[in-house]
Image (cartoon, rainbow over all chains, first blue to last red; front, side, top):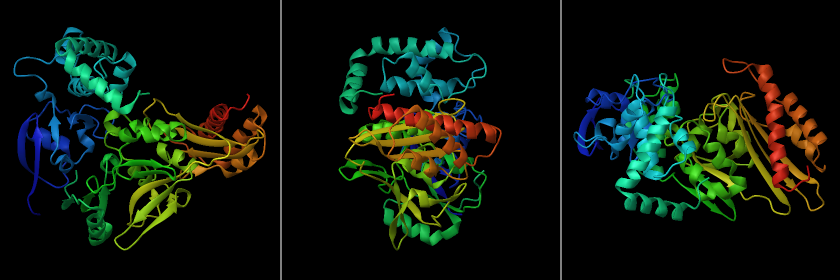
Length: 177
Length: 289
C-alpha cells in the first residue's frame, strides 16, 4: 500500500500527516496527541468526539480522516488562547457544568459553533445545539446556563463583529424557523 | 477498523467518479457523509470514492420543480430557501430530524436514499412528492421513480451505479394544496419508530382531487399507502374519511418488532401518523374541520 497523506489545518497549524486510507478522523487526531477528542460510542450518537470542521460540528468517529483534506479543524486544545480560557470554558467552570468532563470538549465545541452563528441564542437553540452531545453526569441544565452566560460575555467582548455577522446572515437567509 | 481500505479516491468531476466506480467494481463504495458506512457492519469494500468534490452539492428550484444533488447535506436542505419554501417545507423539516447537528452536517440526502433504510426520514417525503432519482454509470444515466428504486431493506436497484440527483417534479396546479411530515421517535433526532408524509389537493368544488400518503419503518422499504390514497379520491374531507384512511393504512403496512417498538405498536402508530398528516394537509388546504 502506497503512503497516503493528509494535508489540513488543526487549531491553526498546518499539518502533513501520513495516514491509512481508511483511518477515521477520531483515530488520527488521538494518535497525534489530541486527547481532548474523546472516544465515546463510535457510532455517531454521543458527540464526545465532536470537532469543528470548517466551523461546523461533526462527529469525528464517523468521518474518514481523508475527508478532512484541505479543511480547518478545531479541537478543544485550540479553543483557549494560551493560558487564557475561552469565555465558554470559563462559564462551564463557573456554572458547575463539568462533572466527569468526558462530554465537555464536545459540548464546548458544539456551543462555539452555535454562538458563531447565533450570538444571542434562545435557550431552545442552545438545547438543540447540545442534542448531539450526551452527558451522563450532570444533565444539560448547567451546560445550557453556562452557554447562555458565555453568549452574554461574547456579545460584550466583541458586540460589533458578532452582531454584524448575525445581521449579514439573517439578511442572506431570511428569518430562520 | 477500516484497515482493509486500500485506496481513498477524491475525484473532482462526476465523470472521474463514474470511471473510478467502473474500475473498482464491486470492491468500491461511494462515500458522501460516511455516517452510515462507518457504522455498518459491512467491511467488504477495498476502495472508497468520495463524491463530495464532484459538484453534486446543490439545491435548485424552478418552475419545473426542484433538483437536489446527491451529496447535499441534511443541514443544507434544512436551511435552503428553496426547500423551506417547497411543498410547505416538508423536506426541510424531515432533514432537520435526521440525527443531531453533527450528523446533519455530514449526512447527505443521497446517502439517506441510497442506503435504503426502511426508516429514512427524507424517503417518505420524497415519495409523496413523486420524486425520481437520477442514476448514472460511466456509459449512461437514467431516471428511476423512487417507488421503483427500493428492492428490500438496505437494498436498491442501483447495482453499482451512482445515485446522482434527486428530481422532484413541479407541484400540481389547479387547486389548494396541503403537505405534512410526521415523525415518531424516542427523541426528535432519534431514528424514527414510524414516520409518515402526506400531500393533498382540494379541487375548486371542495373535493379531494388526489391524496398521497407514505409511511416509513413499517415495512421492508419506505412505501406509499395506495389503498388509503384511493379512499380519499373525490371525497369531501371529514373526520370519518380520515378514520377510514387511517384504518386502511394500518391494513396496508407490514411492520416488524424490534428493540425499539413492537410490530403491533408500529401498526397502530402508522394509522395515527397518517391521520395526523392528512389532518395537517387538510387544514393547510383550507378544509373546514
